[in-house]
Image (cartoon, rainbow, N blue to C red; front, side, top):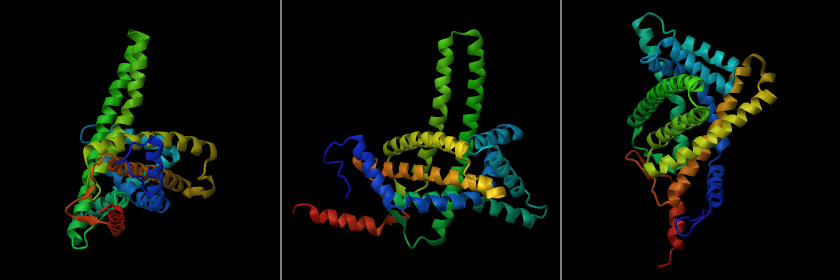
Amino acid sequence: MSINYTKQPKKIFALLKDTYKGWNANDPFRQSAVIAYYTIFSLPALVLILINVAGLILKDGQAQAQIMDQITGLVGADAAQQVQSMADNASNMGDSFFGIVVGVGTLLFGATGVFYQLQQSLNIAWEVQPRPDTGIKKLALDRATSLGVIIAIGFLLIIFMVVSTLLNSLSSWIQQFLPEPLFYVMYVINVLLPLGVITVLFAMIFKILPDAKIEWRSVWVGAFVTSLLFALGKFLLGFYFAESNPASSYGVAGSIILIMLWVNYSALIFLFGAEFTQVYARDRGHNIEPNSYAQRTPNFRLKQMEEDKKQPH
């Protein structure tokens, strides 16, 4: 039974409890497995596009090195090398015009696949679904939106990498010439910067991808909570992978399995954050409405009818 937050004040525990109920009811383990599956097929094209977008401002080698460093920090050097190999293979499109056209089309379709699945998961969490009469137009719009999110992530990575480089250089200078307290200030900034970037990333995904209209004030709170959970999950997953090495029994396929495990667990956190955003929006009376291409799910309409029956006449 859903807790009605708009009628009475509730503590954060009750908010999280209701979030867990909604998250668990949406079969998150199946959804996270699907996201992990599509990520493996999307990853080579996704990394290649991000490298090329970042290379518009940074030197190509520098952009590639920075992105590989980020992947290494998440899943380790062996898995990162596997991703690098996949991206290199994806960039080989041949010399003919037809081969290039097919290669670019396949690249774009593959890169947007995982974001398309994230969209479906957000739609489930926020109880909206595409209208049956939208057809191919909706599919094309979804892929274009996913590509736009990828490009935005690329530019976000550029900003993050440039600012991180400047802060690291400034930290070294402060350590040599300025008082020690300023060094600790820079350390705090270096910790908060990735959290801020991840918050903006989740905010973009929550606002742009789903077939729903949601207010920014709900988006920012949900994105911040999700980024905190993601940062905690990243630390715990890194510790778990380092201590247990769960992919070791899979031999040569171990790197792929490790990436799928990391994405699978991270997707569970993402889905919990999405559900929290929906519950928080309802708590504050911020409506999440279907956009022009979508409608409410039958389950939502059924719950609405049941709630209307309970209202005094």
